[in-house]
Amino acid sequence: MATTEIVRDDRRLSPWQGTARQFDYFWTVYRRTWKSSVISSFVAPLLYVLAMGVLLGTFVHVSPGRLEGATSYLAFIVPGLIAAQAMQTAVSETTYPVMAAIKWHKSFWAQMASPLEVRDLANAMLVFTLFRVGSTCGVYFLVMAPFGVFATWWGPVLAWLSTMLVGMAFGTWTFAFSAFIDGPDAFGLIYRLGLVPLFLFSGSFFPVSNLGTVLEGVAKVTPLWHGVNLTRMLCLDRVDGSTALVNVVVLVVVLVSGWWLAIRMLERRMAT
Image (cartoon, rainbow, N blue to C red; front, side, top):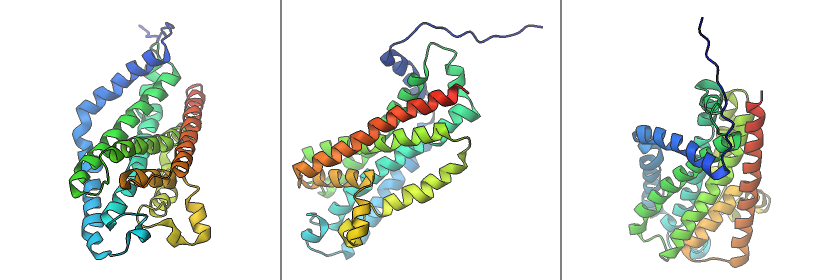
């Protein structure tokens, strides 16, 4: 009776080579399945912005001072919704897809029979997540530009980069969580107890100063608020240097710590 053995090729790849080879897998899969993500990634979020910003915004008449400098409710809400969409896209790409690669179709295990290492699997998936966040948010900015919600041309460019920082701050930690848990049941907690409260109380829909002193302080601790605040300041051209620096530092610290933890958690999972 013939037997088949998986022989691991021990030729070592540099982190860049390994990430590039594994990214090609994700890119190939995406080229074959991208149509299935058009509605959820592009159409639905834009309809949400049009409904909340354009239609509901016609009923909101307050001074720019109460909207953090925005001249209209649409200009106020658009940066917040794009930052929140960056978070949602990153979490979506690092929950069930990670669980599937480990537990269901076991592609991570098959790929480990090649010269790839665990770090390459994690890095490539996070780079692909960065691509998904960048493309989704990029479409947002392009579509909303004709509405006159951006104060400068360069602000949205920097804001686009800030949304990718937001997305990866959440994506790395979600990847680590997905690699840690045994089953998908815990994902419901992420969406119900994590994403929804963050989305509602991050300052996307209204200034967090309306929450009162205590809840305002709680909101400003969350990474999403830092992302929303940074994106809004850039879009409205009302950048406060020290506040923007704090926003960036917080997001970078969350991203780097999450990236380190994501690789450690996947190494632990693949060793079992």
